[in-house]
Amino acid sequence: MMRQIYWAKLQLNTWMVYVAATEKGLCYIGTPNDPFEVMETWLLKHIKEIELIERQEGLQTYTEQLQAYMKGDCKAFTMPLDLYGTDFQKKVWGILQTIPYGETCSYMEVAEKLKNPRAVRAVGGAVGANPVLIVVPCH
Image 1 (tube, rainbow, N blue to C red):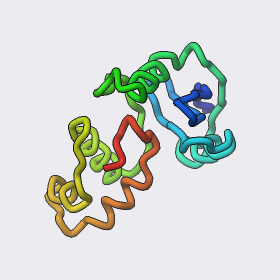
Image 2 (image 1 turned 120 degrees about the vertical axis):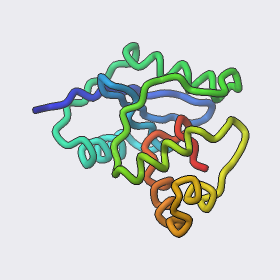
Image 3 (image 1 turned 120 degrees about the horizontal axis):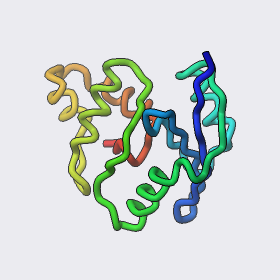
């Protein structure tokens, strides 16, 4: 069955990014200035059979929060997320979302929060696989 994925192009300062969402929530924020095909390839790999539908207005909740964050007017996101990754990656991304605005956390600290201090490299891999940059902080 084809899943509908809604996407929009967003200008953030000097960056242009593509964002995508399912009916459940935001699932992808591209790397600045990447072409459309990068988003399309990621979505096809992780969600499989998809129908991409451009919907600027339908993603306004997401794009407005991202713009407010980049301007410094928003310090926490309230948008729903629909994350695609392994269970381990989702646990790491959950911990990253608890890091307060303006603070950082090392991979070791994240691994310790997972109660698996030897998973530092795996945490780094999960951070690198984060599909919703900015909303789920890098570290």
